[in-house]
Image (cartoon, rainbow, N blue to C red; front, top):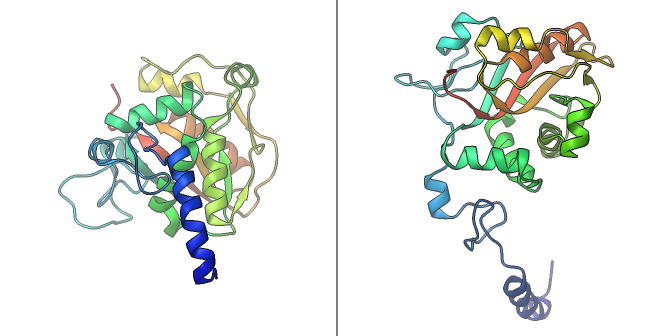
Length: 247
């Protein structure tokens, strides 16, 4: 622990550091006190998910009290979900949409640390050092174009915070798929058929499957099916932002 004299010497240094390299809100240029903290304006415009949510996809549910394993949203009542549970940190709107798009398409890779912090806080009661963190994979051609997989950056951050194992190569997208945008739910699932395979074993393990956004859940379902085939005993889906309702 620094002595009183050391602390007095450090104060001007820290003040100079803050002057030269101010801590700013990750979503704007406003000054904030702590790293990864939002300014009041961005905080008010960021739709964090809390309270009662769907047990399988994490979307917020109205009119219910508390968290219950039996709570299901309309989509999860209608569609088979080949995973055991899911959590989402944000609803995909407002500043959350801005963050996801900046991380995914704007080379703002540092936002994975902010998103990872929120995702870990939302799901830490489900995670342990025995959890294997697997990101949703992107095809090699898309990876070459984008240069990084935003889901892998998120998975690595949450794995570090949880003390778990980061396993980015367990799943592989073996077929380049067309964009899921503007497709029906049925077309989204059909588009992913046979596109994702497991390249290793997760026999008997708890796997946290990590993605930046969930819309229909088609991509996550294809990944979960591959993980089940590879022996996963329990699959927890972790989503940074959940689209509330499919078009």
